[in-house]
Image: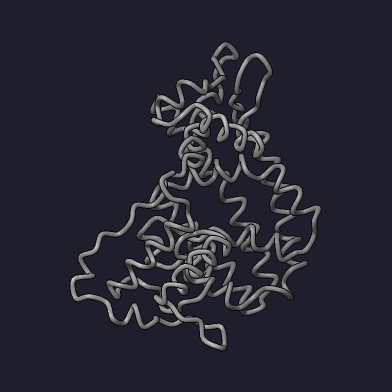
Length: 296
């Protein structure tokens, strides 16, 4: 990557500040993290750089406001180009692995289930060592399996396995919501609702962090361990399946329903909406598999 994510956020925010446009209504860590769909860590690093260069100022109450350098921007600043986001090779290669996994569903055992570092490196125009590092990270999340003296094996999608995972996921996420309800931050809930509003749906970039948020707020390390060990493959599958505009809109509406019930402390309705949302991913995946196989 030419820049890392914190450098990109800093450069992009600088461009937005100098042009005086496309900034979030509230300059907070959580709102900026939601805008870029990242954790708070790279946002903090980006803001430190902007504060050091006086483009932002942190007030005594911790709130951020535009600094003197930003207010003195040039009239020509609006034409300044926005930086290109860093290429996320993990995400790009991960999507390709997911597609290969889906294409294996229902095929004969003779189909080659392996991917090669050299071919992947050539396809993406990157070095083989970078591909190997990406494969290792994907293997850690269950998206690949390293077979000594053979290479990297793509897991074959299994409908029964997915059904079993969804059942356990529903049980554990609802339990996580029950355990963490007292520690839900209203500002976080509002941010996630905003991240599933009409503008986000139109961009096709809705906020899907409520699931990880509920698990984290539960404070239960066994629930966290389950999703850390088993969630990445299926989360990647569901994210890939939800690429269509209609599905994105449906998922966003379900997120908002869950979060609004949680905000109003209607816990029984929040639990039911969360369970329905998780189980609704079954038909989405079935439609995606049919689409992939038709495309082949």
